[in-house]
Image 1 (tube, rainbow, N blue to C red):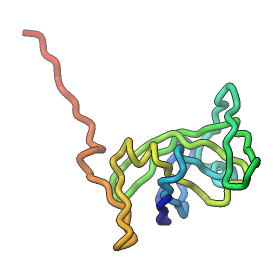
Image 2: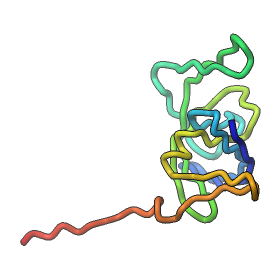
Image 3: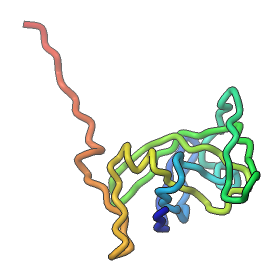
Image 4: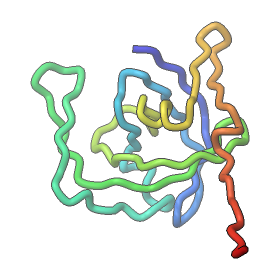
Length: 130
């Protein structure tokens, strides 16, 4: 498991906040503490709750909500779904699925997080009739 922590700007449907964010290759999904969702975005029920195992043997956390958030990494706008995890020890966690989706790389030699701005560009094509 490889981790780096950095402050990021998160933007939701209700506002924005700077959160100290853990980039954790050992966490599959991205998560956010419920303490930081208020004023940022509306929680959405995930329907059937998910049960997440923690590092403590036999300890499981029930997750009932998620939020869709944008976040800025090195001035590049990215977006993903974050599970709202009760008692989360971090403000926010960027998990492996988000890192793979956006091709985020952790540079441990320089304690930096890197993203290629090209992966975040939306390509629009105009389709004109002949």
